[in-house]
Amino acid sequence: MAAQWEDVLREEALVREAALLAVDTALLAGVLMRTAEEPNASEVVNYAPFTLLPSAVPNALFEQAYAVQQDFNLLVDAISQNKEFLERTLASTIKVDDFTARLFRIYTQVLEEGLAQSVFLGINRSDYMFDCGADGTQALKQIEINTIAASFGGLTSRTPDVHRQVLKMLGKAEEASRLLPNNPSQGLALGIAKAWELYGSQSAVVMFLVEDVQRNIFDQRCIENELWSRNIRVIRKRFRDVFEKGSLDDARRLYIDGQEVAVVYYREGYVPQNYDPQNWEARLLLERSRAAKCPDIATQLAGTKKVQQELTRPGILETLLPGRAASVARIRATFTGLYSLDLGEEGDKVAARAIAAPDNFVLKPQREGGGNNLYGEELRHVLEKIKDSPERTSYILMDKIKPQPSKNYLLRSHSPLKVSECISELGIFGVYVRQGKEMVMNESAGHLLRTKAIEHADGGVAAGVAVLDTPFLV
Ligand code: ADP
Ligand code: MG
Image 1 (tube, rainbow, N blue to C red):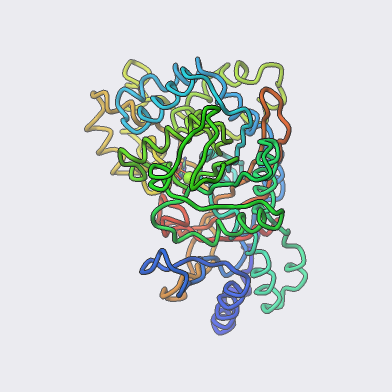
Image 2 (image 1 turned 90 degrees about the vertical axis):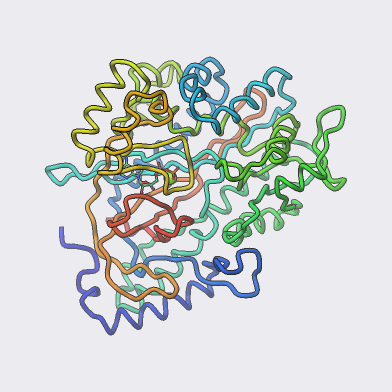
């Protein structure tokens, strides 16, 4: 297959002109981010980084990713309700990983008290790469599923318009007309609105729990504005605000500043740096409350790398999703090799294999947000150091997925315009709402394509490595 956009990529003057148009169009469309210098003010803003050209994505794999999303929603929800599975799976991890252990402690504490919450809202994003086999065939392989603070559903709702414009300018009107519309912010807001409605208090608000540093606020505003347009009130608070002003009444209704909160939507709380002792207390207060948390602590734990690894063991999916053979098959088809590094013979063998061929694997700690995984020589070095210590069990090992690179321009402010060899990661947003035992919503809610230069093994858009993209289905 000829590389996509080959003819265009050769024409340097045209590319330069297209890049100027692309940036202005992105600014007009609202593909925005605050600056690193002023992350908490919107006086001066910039465009979020994006590709000049939409990247080719195999149609069949794109459809496969959509087709399995409702299955993943069911799976995450089932894990979140399975105490025995979470306990058993995370037992070794929480002995050595303090962050997971603290989350787990809150989880147990909340269960012991008994859940006040009866409406459950899940928003996740399942991420994939297209693994290229020796014979050139591509396969959809899951990188991970994010069950907390999955971002860029807002900004990516605006990138198709930008890429459509760029393609037209480059004389590719027919290709432009084939770019799919995409609106995760609307789909995610529909889920939040449903949870708010089922909570059943007209005067209650939706609370976005946000970080101290808020560069990516426009992404969140896209969802916020969808809620305002449905006449649902949104407030933005930090853990510190909850600690200082949050309280529960006798029925464990959550109040902050005198306002009752129906839904807590976390865009924070997924890395250890988000927490100090007061923030942990605030988290506990939120989890004990009647408000629908997105996600509740059990669902956050369901998204750990350790759980992901455990799911690949024979028979596990079948026990988590009994009577759903078709779902199990669709889910399993997206798995690549994942291996436990728990102490013992199995873990020893796995560690030795990785040390012998580090370029075939990725070593992952229980962390989110990009930039934490280890590759190549660094992987070998770290694994050699910890191979006989319990610290090993805080990691999992994964087969490295090897996509076919393609050429593109990554547009980022104050960066020179140059062509890069790139690989892409496709994410599908999922949203579901459960009331008691009954699923009342289970949907896919749009997609996110992120692209990065191949010299970076790791890292997302927020980490400054990947950029926003739009799939061009081939
Ligand atoms: P995080 O929770 O930090 O986002 P991920 O598992 O998504 O962790 O990994 C971060 C990045 O590392 C991914 O976006 C991808 O670029 C790269 N990566 C992760 N796992 C693999 C893998 N198995 N093969 C190739 N690249 C991977
Ligand atoms: Mg990731």
